[in-house]
Image (cartoon, rainbow, N blue to C red):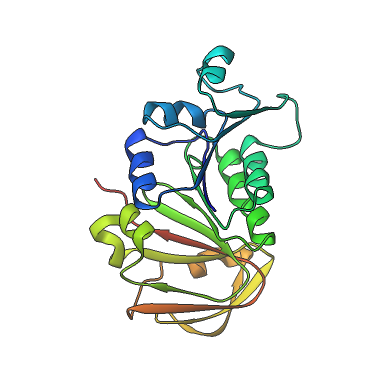
Length: 227
C-alpha cells in the first residue's frame, strides 16, 4: 500500500496534485493543517489526524469531510507528522511519501527529517518531498539513476539529470563507498563535524551506487531554485 502523508508545512495545491498524479497513492493521511491544502486541491483524505491547532477548518467542517478521524490533545509528546508516520507503518504501508514537511519553522523541519527513522526502522521506503528536494534516510546500500524515475521527473522536470546528490551523516559518523558520481571513492567517512564534505555531488555516469558500510545517511536530491 502506497501511502501519502500531507502535513501542514509549505505546500501548494498544484504541487500536491502533481505528486498525486505522478505517484497515485492507495491511502492518504492528512496531518492537521494538511487537510486544508488537500481540500484546496479538490482531494479527500482517507484519514485525518492531529490536534487541529493549526487548521483553518472548524470541527464541523472537518467532520463534514467524511474521512476517518483521530483527534489528539494539543499537549502531547508527539508531533502530528510523527503520529501520521506511526499510523502509516501500523497500517502496513509498503511505501510512504510525505508532502508539506518543509518550509516554515526549522525545529519542525529538523524533527520531520529525524522522524523518517520511523519507517526506516520498519523497513519501509519513505521520503520527504517538496518542489526542490527529495530527502530519504538509508542504512543499506542503494542505487539511483541520472534520468530519475517517475517521482524524480515529476519533482525536478527537465532538470532531473542535473540534480545535486548530497549525503549527510545522521549518526555521529558514517562510512560510504560511491561510484557513478563525480566525487567517488571507497570507504569515505562522513562526519557531522565536517558535514559539508558530502554536499553537492553530481552524476558522472547514468547510474550511481551508494554503498552504506556504517551508520545512517541522509540522501538529499535537490536542484537550485528557479529565479
